[in-house]
Length: 122
Image (tube, rainbow, N blue to C red; front, side, top):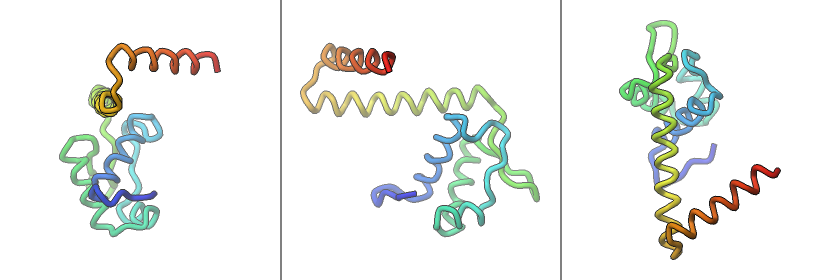
């Protein structure tokens, strides 16, 4: 994983795990890799992984069972909400960037419609 210098690594790891959860790559109730295992895999300090897990637990997206590990929440509605929130953020960022380029709402809608139609044909 390539890390962005402008964002704390633990937040980037949280975002990676959130993306995997909402995409279904990691399912509700699945066990996450151990702190040590994920720190080796991502080549970061175990404390960084621990912080990411603690923050995800604070957000109630994961829970820890003593001696067993860290698991993804089984609350499907919470995962749906996370997915919707992530999508909303992406759309907001897109709209801000498009408006900075000088596009109005109608032009943005036309561009999106063209892309959707193109995707459906492929």
